[in-house]
Image (cartoon, rainbow, N blue to C red):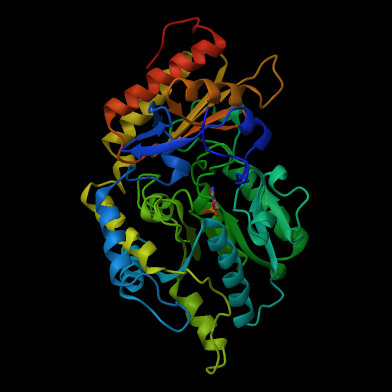
Length: 447
Ligand code: PMP
């Protein structure tokens, strides 16, 4: 039990009463491990919250942050700039698709999403298409917690009881275990259903009323679901056909998660706007960004009176020098260690095989993976749905393994710096934990 007073911090997305009975507190981290207060280690197979992509406790980032704090801790970003902000923006655009060269910094993924929605709206006004005010999102989608992003949420619990925009339609979610179980990478089925649903929405609302589509290239908080084959190209094609902007929410998929720097490159689709955050500086200093096609920024500039800011929007800490310095140091690590693409190379293959070796565990109904992302879905059988996931999650934690439970899906996103031995350790701790909860596999493991 902790000697820390836990009364005052209201934790986000937390059952506080349960937490008070069972406080789980980390006090140290290094590499792929978090450490509890009693000193025991926990293998972090979620990279914090999909963000500590270069591993914990990187001295290069710590040194860069310290140096920046002592050189220029802060300067206002409204009407002024700083060298690390400009340098980091340029470094990011070396990894984005060719036409996406404008970076608008925020402090989080949620702010990046709401900023992207505003930019999309402004762009439609700038080209005299102000009637385009509706959005298309997707069931099971997660787009942060600000009002715009909450409105785009396809997870009903995250919308319920909150003020939301009602001008949103939802494509069907991508998870179809009945057809795509145990797929590796992109599953075969689902693109045609999405295209039919897309066309139905356009027929119902009229293309002249639709501003943008926002989707995660790989659904993250909805249960880690990769897009079916051809899905994202089809979305791009339909957006072009109906003159609708395409926003990729790459808050999770950015910075190497899928095996390319961004999922846009991985799936060979150029969206109009991208949002990103999480891995942007390795989970060290709050930061997010919107990445924008040149022509969108240009149209907004062209339409604005030249005596006023083109965009009445921004945050006090936007592009803060310390966050940008952390980003530059993280980018050095990403590039020097080949982490942005390791998910599509040997490490990605090792991860895929390791994950699918769990198929013999009891009640496993699906395993899926993409890059260094993975999910194992369980059938709760006689238990109420969504109660098995938390049980397995707790047992994993007790056994020194941090996964995420999304309903009855266990979701994984290890630091990209994870070693093969640490992947093996994950598999053995996961196997042990599931076996303790559900019993031994009935047949031998198949790799
Ligand atoms: N979009 C996506 C796809 C996300 O996964 C998240 C965070 N899980 C967000 C937006 C919000 O990011 P943040 O928590 O940094 O506000």
